[in-house]
Length: 107
Image (tube, rainbow, N blue to C red; front, top):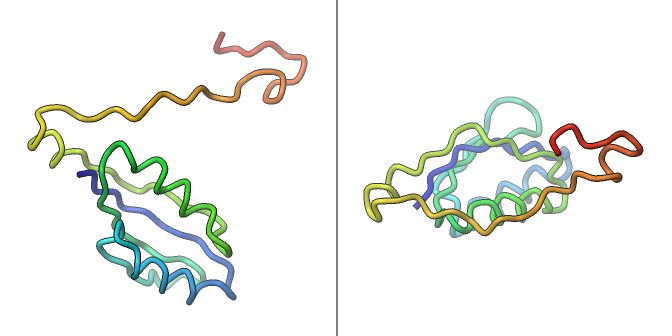
Protein backbone atom coordinates (compact mmCIF):
# COMPACT_ATOMS: atom_id res chain seq x y z
CA UNK A 1 0.00 0.00 0.00
CA UNK A 2 1.28 3.43 -0.95
CA UNK A 3 0.16 6.52 0.93
CA UNK A 4 0.34 9.76 -1.07
CA UNK A 5 -0.45 13.30 0.05
CA UNK A 6 -1.71 15.35 -2.88
CA UNK A 7 -3.17 18.74 -3.74
CA UNK A 8 -5.86 19.17 -6.37
CA UNK A 9 -6.41 22.54 -8.07
CA UNK A 10 -9.84 22.87 -9.65
CA UNK A 11 -11.88 25.44 -11.49
CA UNK A 12 -14.30 27.33 -9.25
CA UNK A 13 -17.26 25.71 -11.02
CA UNK A 14 -15.96 22.15 -10.57
CA UNK A 15 -14.76 22.45 -6.96
CA UNK A 16 -17.84 20.89 -5.33
CA UNK A 17 -18.16 18.09 -7.86
CA UNK A 18 -14.47 17.19 -7.63
CA UNK A 19 -14.65 17.19 -3.82
CA UNK A 20 -17.66 14.84 -3.90
CA UNK A 21 -15.91 12.50 -6.35
CA UNK A 22 -12.78 12.46 -4.19
CA UNK A 23 -14.81 11.62 -1.08
CA UNK A 24 -16.51 8.75 -2.94
CA UNK A 25 -13.28 7.34 -4.41
CA UNK A 26 -12.08 4.02 -2.97
CA UNK A 27 -8.46 5.19 -3.32
CA UNK A 28 -8.93 8.40 -1.28
CA UNK A 29 -8.67 8.03 2.50
CA UNK A 30 -9.22 11.70 3.38
CA UNK A 31 -10.13 14.97 1.67
CA UNK A 32 -9.77 18.44 3.18
CA UNK A 33 -10.38 22.01 2.11
CA UNK A 34 -7.19 24.09 2.18
CA UNK A 35 -8.59 27.59 2.53
CA UNK A 36 -7.17 28.45 -0.90
CA UNK A 37 -9.91 28.97 -3.51
CA UNK A 38 -10.16 25.95 -5.81
CA UNK A 39 -7.56 23.92 -3.88
CA UNK A 40 -8.21 20.62 -2.11
CA UNK A 41 -5.84 18.36 -0.20
CA UNK A 42 -6.26 14.60 -0.12
CA UNK A 43 -4.60 11.41 1.04
CA UNK A 44 -4.60 8.53 -1.43
CA UNK A 45 -3.99 4.94 -0.36
CA UNK A 46 -3.58 2.38 -3.12
CA UNK A 47 -1.34 -0.37 -4.45
CA UNK A 48 2.12 0.79 -5.54
CA UNK A 49 1.66 -0.58 -9.04
CA UNK A 50 -1.50 1.50 -9.45
CA UNK A 51 -0.54 4.88 -7.90
CA UNK A 52 0.79 6.42 -11.13
CA UNK A 53 -2.37 5.46 -13.02
CA UNK A 54 -4.60 6.71 -10.18
CA UNK A 55 -2.91 10.12 -10.14
CA UNK A 56 -3.06 10.30 -13.94
CA UNK A 57 -6.77 9.47 -13.94
CA UNK A 58 -7.45 12.12 -11.30
CA UNK A 59 -5.64 14.77 -13.33
CA UNK A 60 -7.97 13.97 -16.23
CA UNK A 61 -11.19 14.65 -14.32
CA UNK A 62 -13.36 17.48 -15.65
CA UNK A 63 -12.49 20.70 -13.86
CA UNK A 64 -9.15 19.49 -12.44
CA UNK A 65 -6.40 21.91 -13.43
CA UNK A 66 -3.47 20.34 -11.59
CA UNK A 67 -2.63 17.45 -9.26
CA UNK A 68 0.43 17.99 -7.08
CA UNK A 69 2.28 15.20 -5.29
CA UNK A 70 3.22 16.56 -1.86
CA UNK A 71 4.45 13.37 -0.19
CA UNK A 72 4.56 9.64 -0.81
CA UNK A 73 5.30 6.75 1.53
CA UNK A 74 6.02 3.16 0.56
CA UNK A 75 6.71 2.17 4.18
CA UNK A 76 3.69 -0.14 4.55
CA UNK A 77 4.51 -1.95 1.33
CA UNK A 78 8.16 -2.36 2.28
CA UNK A 79 7.16 -3.66 5.71
CA UNK A 80 4.52 -6.07 4.35
CA UNK A 81 6.31 -7.36 1.23
CA UNK A 82 9.95 -6.74 2.02
CA UNK A 83 10.33 -4.75 -1.20
CA UNK A 84 8.67 -1.92 -3.12
CA UNK A 85 6.75 -2.92 -6.26
CA UNK A 86 7.98 -1.16 -9.34
CA UNK A 87 5.36 -0.10 -11.90
CA UNK A 88 5.85 -1.17 -15.49
CA UNK A 89 8.33 1.06 -17.31
CA UNK A 90 6.76 3.68 -19.56
CA UNK A 91 9.21 5.33 -21.97
CA UNK A 92 9.42 9.10 -21.78
CA UNK A 93 8.47 11.16 -24.79
CA UNK A 94 11.83 12.82 -25.34
CA UNK A 95 12.62 13.20 -28.98
CA UNK A 96 11.95 15.72 -31.71
CA UNK A 97 8.55 16.48 -30.16
CA UNK A 98 10.28 17.68 -26.98
CA UNK A 99 13.50 19.10 -28.31
CA UNK A 100 12.74 20.02 -31.92
CA UNK A 101 15.95 20.03 -33.93
CA UNK A 102 18.09 20.19 -30.79
CA UNK A 103 19.43 16.77 -29.76
CA UNK A 104 18.16 15.33 -26.51
CA UNK A 105 20.84 16.19 -23.91
CA UNK A 106 19.94 13.07 -21.93
CA UNK A 107 20.89 10.66 -24.74
